[in-house]
Image (tube, rainbow, N blue to C red; front, side, top):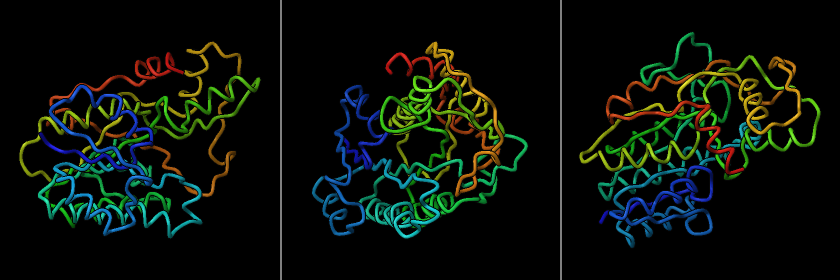
Length: 284
């Protein structure tokens, strides 16, 4: 039986992995968050790996406050780069697989077609920069590493765009939502299943980047409209431009991810964004 460490287990992705963990009785899961394992404590991480003989580490922990990161540079870098380095080094010491979750924000959003794993990252925000540094730290310190870049994550857990739209839809008659940023929502439950497929199918050292989101491409405006329609909320959604919704950090205007590599390598079928959204909204 292989031992799997899940970091950031109380976040959206970690919670979704926990929900499906009973489907994988061949693995022993260790679900940790900062209360169980402080990733900034290098000695604690080393001890945890030794005591629990970790074979696979799925790193869902991250500093994700995109705008705050512009001011809180030290904690953002510590969590998104330094803790990744610590995990990678421990994985390397134990010949363990590291699966590290990254983001579409490593790209500048000026592409004209979906981003592939070969496209050169060029983050526009400090958050994106710290996530890119985390990717590099993972690869530099462990030869058995999978990096998964994803986008627009949502679920029934935590704070996310879908929950915000539901709240606003019940509180307001009309809202403005950005219509000039294009990407793809990702249901964290679909990503959790994809990660476990990689765990099951991979049986040799690997060093690869993969892109994963749901299928399709929409704007935040389209996303909001779909939420209101599915839940029959009488809230009018008006399209606005990014310049009318000023934020501290720049967002990529186009960050659709090309998923052909992960589909080919793991024979993976990826659900369409609207189908997954409908599924989640039955739970909210």
